[in-house]
Image (cartoon, rainbow, N blue to C red; front, side, top):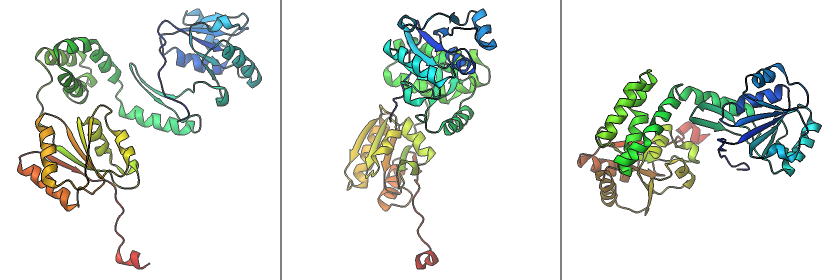
Length: 339
Protein backbone atom coordinates (compact mmCIF):
# COMPACT_ATOMS: atom_id res chain seq x y z
CA UNK A 1 0.00 0.00 0.00
CA UNK A 2 1.18 3.50 -0.79
CA UNK A 3 -1.49 5.06 1.45
CA UNK A 4 -2.28 3.73 4.93
CA UNK A 5 -6.03 3.65 5.69
CA UNK A 6 -6.84 5.35 8.98
CA UNK A 7 -9.68 7.41 10.44
CA UNK A 8 -8.90 10.92 11.73
CA UNK A 9 -10.51 12.12 14.96
CA UNK A 10 -12.40 15.36 14.38
CA UNK A 11 -14.00 16.03 17.78
CA UNK A 12 -12.84 19.41 19.06
CA UNK A 13 -10.88 20.10 15.87
CA UNK A 14 -11.34 22.05 12.64
CA UNK A 15 -11.50 21.22 8.96
CA UNK A 16 -10.30 24.04 6.71
CA UNK A 17 -11.58 24.34 3.14
CA UNK A 18 -9.78 26.73 0.81
CA UNK A 19 -12.11 27.74 -2.01
CA UNK A 20 -15.58 29.06 -2.64
CA UNK A 21 -16.98 27.23 -5.66
CA UNK A 22 -18.40 23.81 -6.52
CA UNK A 23 -15.27 21.88 -5.56
CA UNK A 24 -15.27 23.52 -2.15
CA UNK A 25 -18.99 22.79 -1.77
CA UNK A 26 -18.37 19.11 -2.49
CA UNK A 27 -15.76 18.96 0.27
CA UNK A 28 -18.04 20.88 2.64
CA UNK A 29 -20.76 18.26 2.19
CA UNK A 30 -18.27 15.59 3.23
CA UNK A 31 -16.86 17.58 6.13
CA UNK A 32 -20.32 18.32 7.52
CA UNK A 33 -20.79 14.60 8.14
CA UNK A 34 -18.22 14.96 10.95
CA UNK A 35 -18.41 16.88 14.23
CA UNK A 36 -15.51 19.17 13.30
CA UNK A 37 -15.82 22.96 13.12
CA UNK A 38 -15.70 23.81 9.40
CA UNK A 39 -13.87 26.93 8.25
CA UNK A 40 -14.25 28.12 4.65
CA UNK A 41 -11.41 30.40 3.54
CA UNK A 42 -12.21 32.43 0.43
CA UNK A 43 -11.63 36.13 -0.23
CA UNK A 44 -14.84 36.82 -2.13
CA UNK A 45 -18.46 35.76 -1.74
CA UNK A 46 -18.79 31.96 -2.02
CA UNK A 47 -21.35 30.21 -4.20
CA UNK A 48 -25.00 30.02 -3.16
CA UNK A 49 -24.81 26.64 -1.41
CA UNK A 50 -21.83 27.65 0.71
CA UNK A 51 -23.33 31.05 1.46
CA UNK A 52 -26.48 29.36 2.77
CA UNK A 53 -24.41 27.09 5.02
CA UNK A 54 -22.58 30.13 6.39
CA UNK A 55 -25.89 31.90 7.13
CA UNK A 56 -27.12 28.78 8.92
CA UNK A 57 -24.01 28.78 11.09
CA UNK A 58 -22.79 25.42 9.81
CA UNK A 59 -19.63 26.96 8.33
CA UNK A 60 -17.53 29.93 9.37
CA UNK A 61 -16.19 32.21 6.63
CA UNK A 62 -12.61 33.50 6.67
CA UNK A 63 -12.22 36.19 4.01
CA UNK A 64 -8.77 37.41 5.06
CA UNK A 65 -5.28 36.35 4.10
CA UNK A 66 -4.26 32.70 4.26
CA UNK A 67 -1.62 32.54 7.01
CA UNK A 68 -0.19 29.69 9.13
CA UNK A 69 -2.57 30.63 11.96
CA UNK A 70 -5.51 29.52 9.81
CA UNK A 71 -4.39 25.90 10.10
CA UNK A 72 -4.02 25.70 13.88
CA UNK A 73 -5.85 22.66 15.33
CA UNK A 74 -6.95 21.57 11.85
CA UNK A 75 -7.46 17.83 11.45
CA UNK A 76 -7.51 18.22 7.67
CA UNK A 77 -7.25 20.90 5.01
CA UNK A 78 -8.94 20.73 1.61
CA UNK A 79 -7.52 22.93 -1.15
CA UNK A 80 -10.34 23.35 -3.65
CA UNK A 81 -10.28 26.66 -5.51
CA UNK A 82 -10.67 25.10 -8.96
CA UNK A 83 -7.48 26.79 -10.18
CA UNK A 84 -4.51 24.35 -10.31
CA UNK A 85 -1.89 27.08 -9.98
CA UNK A 86 -3.58 28.75 -7.01
CA UNK A 87 -4.18 25.36 -5.41
CA UNK A 88 -0.45 24.58 -5.63
CA UNK A 89 0.44 27.91 -4.01
CA UNK A 90 -2.06 27.41 -1.18
CA UNK A 91 -0.80 23.86 -0.72
CA UNK A 92 2.69 25.23 -0.09
CA UNK A 93 1.39 27.63 2.58
CA UNK A 94 -0.64 24.90 4.30
CA UNK A 95 2.28 22.44 4.27
CA UNK A 96 4.62 25.06 5.72
CA UNK A 97 2.13 25.38 8.60
CA UNK A 98 2.24 21.61 9.19
CA UNK A 99 -1.26 20.87 7.89
CA UNK A 100 -2.47 17.54 6.53
CA UNK A 101 -3.60 18.50 3.04
CA UNK A 102 -5.85 17.17 0.29
CA UNK A 103 -5.67 19.05 -3.02
CA UNK A 104 -8.61 18.32 -5.31
CA UNK A 105 -7.63 16.52 -8.53
CA UNK A 106 -3.89 16.75 -7.74
CA UNK A 107 -3.04 13.45 -5.99
CA UNK A 108 0.70 14.14 -6.10
CA UNK A 109 0.12 17.06 -3.71
CA UNK A 110 -2.09 15.08 -1.32
CA UNK A 111 -1.08 13.84 2.13
CA UNK A 112 -4.54 12.29 2.42
CA UNK A 113 -6.77 10.90 -0.32
CA UNK A 114 -10.56 11.13 -0.13
CA UNK A 115 -12.15 7.67 -0.29
CA UNK A 116 -15.58 6.64 -1.46
CA UNK A 117 -17.64 6.44 1.73
CA UNK A 118 -20.51 4.25 2.85
CA UNK A 119 -22.05 6.08 5.80
CA UNK A 120 -24.04 4.21 8.43
CA UNK A 121 -22.82 6.43 11.25
CA UNK A 122 -21.13 5.29 13.46
CA UNK A 123 -20.41 2.46 11.01
CA UNK A 124 -18.34 3.94 8.18
CA UNK A 125 -16.75 2.07 5.29
CA UNK A 126 -14.04 3.87 3.31
CA UNK A 127 -12.99 2.54 -0.11
CA UNK A 128 -9.81 3.77 -1.73
CA UNK A 129 -7.82 2.98 -4.85
CA UNK A 130 -4.90 5.39 -4.15
CA UNK A 131 -6.35 7.65 -6.82
CA UNK A 132 -5.92 5.07 -9.58
CA UNK A 133 -9.51 3.98 -10.23
CA UNK A 134 -12.25 6.19 -8.73
CA UNK A 135 -14.88 4.54 -10.95
CA UNK A 136 -14.02 1.16 -9.43
CA UNK A 137 -14.23 2.64 -5.93
CA UNK A 138 -17.75 3.88 -6.70
CA UNK A 139 -18.73 0.43 -8.00
CA UNK A 140 -17.50 -1.18 -4.78
CA UNK A 141 -19.35 1.48 -2.78
CA UNK A 142 -22.59 0.53 -4.54
CA UNK A 143 -22.08 -3.14 -3.65
CA UNK A 144 -21.40 -2.33 0.00
CA UNK A 145 -24.40 0.02 0.18
CA UNK A 146 -26.56 -2.93 -0.87
CA UNK A 147 -25.04 -5.16 1.83
CA UNK A 148 -25.62 -2.84 4.79
CA UNK A 149 -29.20 -2.03 5.73
CA UNK A 150 -29.92 1.69 6.33
CA UNK A 151 -30.58 1.26 10.07
CA UNK A 152 -27.41 -0.69 10.84
CA UNK A 153 -25.64 2.35 12.25
CA UNK A 154 -28.41 2.81 14.80
CA UNK A 155 -27.93 -0.74 16.04
CA UNK A 156 -24.17 -0.16 16.32
CA UNK A 157 -24.82 3.02 18.32
CA UNK A 158 -27.18 1.09 20.62
CA UNK A 159 -24.50 -1.55 21.15
CA UNK A 160 -22.01 1.19 21.96
CA UNK A 161 -24.30 2.57 24.68
CA UNK A 162 -24.61 -0.88 26.25
CA UNK A 163 -20.97 -1.88 25.88
CA UNK A 164 -20.06 -0.60 29.35
CA UNK A 165 -22.79 -2.65 31.04
CA UNK A 166 -21.67 -5.74 29.14
CA UNK A 167 -18.05 -5.18 30.16
CA UNK A 168 -19.05 -4.99 33.83
CA UNK A 169 -21.16 -8.16 33.83
CA UNK A 170 -19.67 -10.50 31.24
CA UNK A 171 -16.32 -12.22 30.74
CA UNK A 172 -14.48 -11.51 27.47
CA UNK A 173 -15.65 -14.71 25.76
CA UNK A 174 -19.27 -14.11 26.79
CA UNK A 175 -19.05 -10.53 25.51
CA UNK A 176 -17.79 -11.70 22.14
CA UNK A 177 -20.63 -14.22 21.91
CA UNK A 178 -23.12 -11.51 22.92
CA UNK A 179 -22.08 -9.09 20.19
CA UNK A 180 -21.93 -11.85 17.59
CA UNK A 181 -25.54 -12.68 18.51
CA UNK A 182 -26.57 -9.00 18.47
CA UNK A 183 -25.27 -8.41 14.95
CA UNK A 184 -26.27 -11.73 13.39
CA UNK A 185 -29.47 -12.78 15.12
CA UNK A 186 -32.72 -11.53 16.65
CA UNK A 187 -31.62 -8.03 17.78
CA UNK A 188 -30.41 -7.12 14.29
CA UNK A 189 -33.59 -8.43 12.70
CA UNK A 190 -35.71 -6.50 15.19
CA UNK A 191 -33.80 -3.25 14.71
CA UNK A 192 -33.95 -3.55 10.93
CA UNK A 193 -37.73 -3.92 11.25
CA UNK A 194 -37.95 -0.55 13.09
CA UNK A 195 -38.26 -2.22 16.51
CA UNK A 196 -35.49 -0.37 18.35
CA UNK A 197 -37.13 -0.87 21.75
CA UNK A 198 -37.48 -4.61 21.18
CA UNK A 199 -33.83 -4.89 20.14
CA UNK A 200 -32.67 -2.89 23.16
CA UNK A 201 -34.78 -5.03 25.49
CA UNK A 202 -33.32 -8.25 24.07
CA UNK A 203 -29.75 -7.02 24.50
CA UNK A 204 -30.32 -5.73 28.04
CA UNK A 205 -31.97 -8.98 29.09
CA UNK A 206 -29.07 -10.96 27.65
CA UNK A 207 -26.55 -8.86 29.57
CA UNK A 208 -28.50 -9.19 32.82
CA UNK A 209 -28.93 -12.96 32.39
CA UNK A 210 -25.23 -13.59 31.83
CA UNK A 211 -24.92 -13.62 28.06
CA UNK A 212 -26.54 -14.34 24.73
CA UNK A 213 -29.02 -17.21 24.43
CA UNK A 214 -27.12 -20.48 24.19
CA UNK A 215 -26.79 -21.33 20.50
CA UNK A 216 -26.44 -24.77 19.10
CA UNK A 217 -22.78 -25.79 18.92
CA UNK A 218 -21.28 -24.54 15.68
CA UNK A 219 -20.08 -27.32 13.38
CA UNK A 220 -16.37 -27.79 12.82
CA UNK A 221 -15.65 -26.21 9.44
CA UNK A 222 -13.25 -27.99 7.09
CA UNK A 223 -12.22 -25.29 4.62
CA UNK A 224 -10.22 -25.63 1.40
CA UNK A 225 -8.18 -22.67 0.24
CA UNK A 226 -8.43 -23.67 -3.40
CA UNK A 227 -5.50 -22.96 -5.70
CA UNK A 228 -4.06 -19.84 -7.23
CA UNK A 229 -4.27 -17.40 -4.32
CA UNK A 230 -6.80 -16.15 -1.82
CA UNK A 231 -9.22 -15.14 -4.56
CA UNK A 232 -9.90 -18.87 -5.02
CA UNK A 233 -11.48 -19.19 -1.57
CA UNK A 234 -15.28 -19.08 -1.41
CA UNK A 235 -17.41 -16.42 0.27
CA UNK A 236 -18.73 -18.95 2.78
CA UNK A 237 -15.16 -19.91 3.66
CA UNK A 238 -14.33 -16.26 4.30
CA UNK A 239 -17.34 -16.00 6.61
CA UNK A 240 -16.17 -19.01 8.62
CA UNK A 241 -12.65 -17.60 8.91
CA UNK A 242 -14.04 -14.32 10.20
CA UNK A 243 -16.20 -16.11 12.78
CA UNK A 244 -13.52 -18.55 13.97
CA UNK A 245 -12.03 -18.65 17.45
CA UNK A 246 -9.44 -21.31 16.53
CA UNK A 247 -7.95 -21.96 13.08
CA UNK A 248 -5.87 -25.07 12.43
CA UNK A 249 -3.66 -24.72 9.35
CA UNK A 250 -2.79 -27.89 7.43
CA UNK A 251 -0.69 -27.65 4.26
CA UNK A 252 -1.76 -24.06 3.58
CA UNK A 253 0.23 -23.02 0.51
CA UNK A 254 -1.11 -19.46 0.38
CA UNK A 255 -0.41 -17.68 3.72
CA UNK A 256 -2.20 -14.55 2.45
CA UNK A 257 -5.45 -16.48 2.90
CA UNK A 258 -5.06 -15.98 6.65
CA UNK A 259 -5.37 -12.23 6.14
CA UNK A 260 -9.07 -12.95 5.61
CA UNK A 261 -9.40 -14.41 9.12
CA UNK A 262 -10.39 -12.66 12.32
CA UNK A 263 -7.24 -11.03 13.64
CA UNK A 264 -7.57 -12.29 17.23
CA UNK A 265 -8.41 -15.89 16.30
CA UNK A 266 -5.91 -18.44 17.61
CA UNK A 267 -3.88 -19.92 14.75
CA UNK A 268 -2.26 -23.34 15.08
CA UNK A 269 0.06 -24.79 12.43
CA UNK A 270 -0.13 -28.55 11.88
CA UNK A 271 2.47 -30.86 10.41
CA UNK A 272 1.44 -31.97 6.90
CA UNK A 273 1.62 -35.63 7.98
CA UNK A 274 -0.74 -35.24 10.96
CA UNK A 275 -2.83 -38.42 11.15
CA UNK A 276 -6.64 -38.12 10.90
CA UNK A 277 -7.13 -39.47 14.43
CA UNK A 278 -4.73 -36.96 15.98
CA UNK A 279 -6.27 -34.15 13.95
CA UNK A 280 -9.77 -35.06 15.13
CA UNK A 281 -8.64 -35.01 18.77
CA UNK A 282 -7.25 -31.50 18.37
CA UNK A 283 -10.36 -30.19 16.61
CA UNK A 284 -12.74 -31.86 19.07
CA UNK A 285 -10.85 -30.51 22.08
CA UNK A 286 -11.21 -26.91 20.91
CA UNK A 287 -14.85 -27.41 19.89
CA UNK A 288 -15.62 -28.87 23.35
CA UNK A 289 -14.35 -25.61 24.86
CA UNK A 290 -17.02 -23.76 22.88
CA UNK A 291 -14.69 -22.45 20.18
CA UNK A 292 -15.79 -22.00 16.60
CA UNK A 293 -13.21 -24.20 14.92
CA UNK A 294 -11.90 -24.09 11.35
CA UNK A 295 -9.48 -26.50 9.72
CA UNK A 296 -7.92 -24.56 6.84
CA UNK A 297 -6.11 -26.67 4.28
CA UNK A 298 -4.73 -26.50 0.79
CA UNK A 299 -6.17 -29.95 0.13
CA UNK A 300 -9.66 -30.50 -1.28
CA UNK A 301 -11.89 -31.31 1.71
CA UNK A 302 -14.50 -32.75 -0.67
CA UNK A 303 -12.10 -35.28 -2.24
CA UNK A 304 -8.95 -35.86 -0.19
CA UNK A 305 -9.18 -39.33 1.48
CA UNK A 306 -7.52 -38.24 4.73
CA UNK A 307 -9.86 -35.27 5.12
CA UNK A 308 -12.90 -37.38 4.28
CA UNK A 309 -11.74 -39.65 7.11
CA UNK A 310 -11.49 -36.66 9.46
CA UNK A 311 -15.07 -35.66 8.63
CA UNK A 312 -16.28 -39.22 9.29
CA UNK A 313 -14.51 -39.44 12.66
CA UNK A 314 -15.93 -36.10 13.78
CA UNK A 315 -19.43 -37.21 12.79
CA UNK A 316 -18.96 -40.48 14.70
CA UNK A 317 -18.30 -38.41 17.83
CA UNK A 318 -21.62 -36.66 17.32
CA UNK A 319 -20.09 -33.40 16.15
CA UNK A 320 -21.43 -31.27 13.35
CA UNK A 321 -19.18 -30.97 10.32
CA UNK A 322 -19.31 -28.41 7.52
CA UNK A 323 -17.12 -29.04 4.48
CA UNK A 324 -16.42 -26.01 2.30
CA UNK A 325 -14.54 -26.70 -0.91
CA UNK A 326 -12.37 -24.19 -2.71
CA UNK A 327 -11.97 -23.50 -6.40
CA UNK A 328 -9.72 -26.06 -8.07
CA UNK A 329 -8.86 -26.52 -11.76
CA UNK A 330 -11.28 -28.85 -13.51
CA UNK A 331 -9.55 -32.00 -14.79
CA UNK A 332 -9.24 -31.95 -18.56
CA UNK A 333 -11.56 -34.23 -20.49
CA UNK A 334 -10.14 -36.77 -22.92
CA UNK A 335 -10.77 -34.48 -25.88
CA UNK A 336 -9.20 -31.49 -24.11
CA UNK A 337 -6.16 -33.55 -23.10
CA UNK A 338 -5.75 -34.82 -26.67
CA UNK A 339 -5.87 -31.29 -28.00
